[in-house]
Length: 543
Image (cartoon, rainbow, N blue to C red):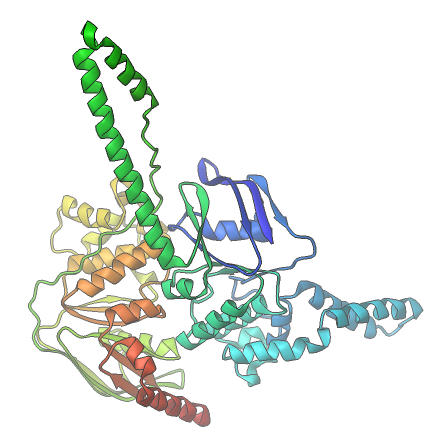
């Protein structure tokens, strides 16, 4: 169990939360939610002891162990993979290293022998003899091949490192598990495995995630950071969302009724206060008026960007034709003889176990790189806007946001540009800040503004929900549902794919699957899933 008492965290004049007293109990999974900048990651760091609170205290039940999902993917580069996982249990790892160091001493003496005996006893109590096999089992379940278990972390890819660090956090059955965006860079299969793990986990979990389906599947409670407070709600994210809207609506309706009553009483008092025969009634109403007050509705930190994509040029039927496309990167075959016809109005989700495959395909379609062979031909009426996974080049300049957006807009009027920036939550002086100092989420919203002013009839999105809060994801999700043009996209967000896509394309180096259906139908279809197993089985054989 972990509790806070009168916890306050502020940075200068900015108060993230104030006098928070809250209790997280075993057997529950708490989804920590809030707008970008509300303090979700900071709160986890305070709980773990990485950051000292401005005031107040964190209490952890004596003898309980906290495990944290590390965010620095290079922190363990000099260590073997299996050792990195075991490091998740600090005491076990410390006992193991101390024991090994004593055994390695050339002048091992009686005192060392007594110390080793104590360490061996504690090592056994901590299930140290099972550590390697437990770590290996976790790694395998998270898709890390056995051949990599004793490699150095520096030899792994970015997505492999993410999964090893997740195994580190889960290792050894911690009493309190703190997970900050654990589904980032995970395949949908790995996310499904993690969901099952957390559902069966008997201890305390506090998780930050922008994946709505993940929060719905694993959370028993929602801890909402808003109004500089943290409020607990029983239920998953969808239940919280409905309950929160209902509570706000009830407050607003009650205030409206109170305002009407106040106006009615004031009118009576003004009319009859000087009338001797009505004086008693007027006094009574004054007393009633003094007792009435409006419930304070503090401004929420949550803001929904107003995203809407339109197009000017009426599209024809044929959008793009891909013919026998092949591409390798650094000798690694990603796309093999891939052919596809895309027609107007299709919303296609591209998926792959290797995210680089889809990024490479989109870069070919955008003209940023050339295929090794084959072709991708755009229809004569197709106009397209591109959202890249890596947006660094767009913001490597000294332009303010108005100047930045003007690069992509036919209409150069400042009021026009300010209007689009305002819709993306850059109002007033915010629209004049420099583009190079933006946060990850702010850069994403700027790219949405760019795509809106371009008014193209084809949109390409490479992982658009990264760096976004749940409010922005919801706004984007709804905008793409409403868009009548063509969309090509990839995402790790199940709900995003399910609600937007009407066609699924899964690509492997040994072939692809073309499914004209919704995502849940694709995953449930035995023919498609048999084909998937064949493709990935063949892929393992070729490796």
